[in-house]
Length: 317
Image (tube, rainbow, N blue to C red; front, side, top):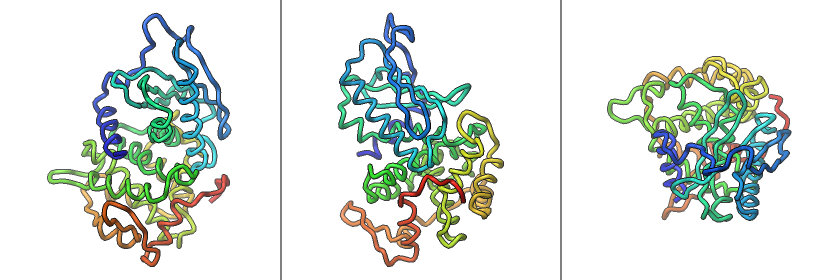
């Protein structure tokens, strides 16, 4: 399942496995590499392949990168950074991996198995997830849940807005994943419980709740997308270091609320329980026989629908 693959990669990222460390093949290096360039969303993206990669593999990777960049551009109104290098290598385990770095300039390491098919690449969420990281400033380590959470939350929504993922799959992923983010016995706030589930899915839950709070307070005229677009327009990309307070304040200013700061105050230092079953009922998300469907008469159905609707590139609030 897509969710199971997501969990394995997140665990690998947390452990810092060798599969995610970029190394050139023996005898190769930047001087013997092959570079392809893409211009998407106002950004120049250089995809660097080690010498010897077959043209068919390069074409498949480029299509995947372009697709992911288009999804991120659709969500944020433009690509988050002006220049990006993606360094492709062969993964030791034959899978699809990624790791984003922000300084001094943005780059993404992308170890990919030699046997990975074009179809499997196109279905992979990994590159979109990594590119979303570029649209949020670097924060102190204790706030890693904000970073991983926003990438986990935005990635499927960006793909849905770009017409690349059915809306039902967006909500199916949230239904499947968010229980991992709920506080367990002995857990503290999100700043102080750096487990896999609380970091990725606890962070994702924070952003979903923030989304709904913003839309409720503004009568659905603003959403989290407005806040996140404002953050990158203010220069808050992964290439800079900001505080959580500054980041959330800029986001709140764009929605004319204090939703982000209020929710952070509630969740960063104390465990906050969430009735997910009740939330799904209010949103009109129904799960029957393993399939997700929608109830458009539910109280928050309009908010649910607005989240995955495609927005214009205009970043003004």
